[in-house]
Amino acid sequence: MATESYPLHASVFEGDKIRVAQLIRTHDLGEKDKHGNTPLHLAVMLGHTECVQLLLAHNAPVKVKNSMGWTPLAEAISYGNRQTIVSVLRKLKLQAREALEDRRPSLIQALKDIGDFYLELKWDFNSWVPLVSRMLPSDVCKIFKKGSCIRLDTTLVDFNDMHWERGDISFVFNGSERPQQSLTVLDNRLGVYQKIRYEESDACLEEEVSILMGSDILSAQMSTKNITFSRAQHGWLFREDKTEMVGDFKADFYYVNGLILQSRKRREHLTPEDVQKNKAIMENIGRGSWDQSPPQVERRRSMTPPSRSSVTWEEYMTAPAGTPPCLARPLIAKENSKAFKATVAMSEDFPMTVEILLDVLEVVAPFKQFQKLRDFMMTKLPSGFPVKIEIPVFPTITAKVTFTLFEWRNDLEAELFEIPADFREDAGRFPDL
Image 1 (cartoon, rainbow, N blue to C red):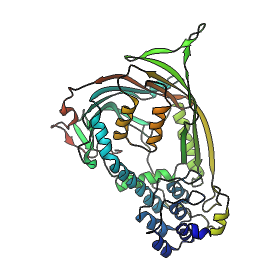
Image 2 (cartoon, rainbow, N blue to C red):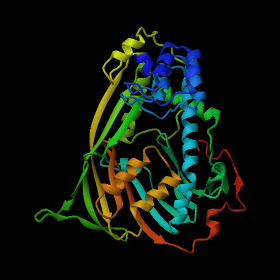
Image 3 (cartoon, one colour):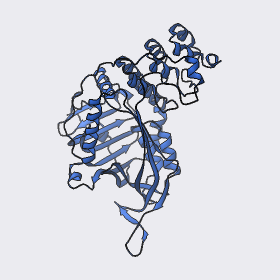
Image 4 (cartoon, rainbow, N blue to C red):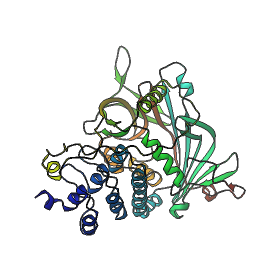
């Protein structure tokens, strides 16, 4: 009966690639079984590499979680076959690009419909640990928007893998260009520019796979279901609601209550040396004493496959829903739920609405579960615009974002969004982009 309910799943489970090839054209490749697994989940967990390649060739969805919260990529990392990880990661990135291209026309139109403006955004990290704040990066970003073009000026050249470099950098997005040509980064000091790679090189992909194979597998989500807001107060004898000027804008301060980060880590694929190295990195970050030089990434080889599963399809399907028997490497997982205390300052004076800000963000940096953020920002926030947000990112370090200046502008020159004629192209100026 179970086989009749999920014939493609059953064929993948048995590793019957001929049957899989027959069913793959007529069945929903994104269908989930009672445990939330898609056919691709099962193929990866059981090490049926030919079934994996068949499913990926027919565009089986990769960005999908099972009932335990894990994607096929997470299961591929756990299993440890390097080529499978590369294939799944490459397909994940391809599907993300295709999804963006589908949305692109409507996003660009939304950007055109917004009035032209100039915005200053300050972000920094602070710590109560003496001297640590001096080591942490901060920046004032200047953002210009005209038509379907956006320019962002920053002094922070790079902040990746806990190292950073100062400079004079501009990111220019041109919505009228083809996706492959739409984003350019300028180094204004050196007089060079680099087109942002639309597709990652094989070398970058291989390096990312090595990093994944040596790191914890993470599944994290910020629960916003139980969030409430309460007015922040100040004063010793006579407590009163906190209202202050943030830049040019009068703002009411609120505490954000019930903000919970739910995270799960898996490390059955890691060696004891990996665990110690990752622990040391996180401890250094928490103290603000990390090395500012980029780490060398060693190429990881495929792991020895886990023992072949003796679980039958019938046993798998008769297990309680959401708690399937182990099909691959025995799980080593840790769950953590952490409450955050955040502060937000809301201003009725800010000229831009939250909805317009979200339209701009989605055009320039679309990301997973954007609709959830939009729903939260539109329905949960107190009245006004969030001109200042302060939230802890590590036990000793707090991130702060402040909107200090905003002006509607109809006098922005088109040249601001063009590559200067005397700049030369340097495709290797920013290796990480």
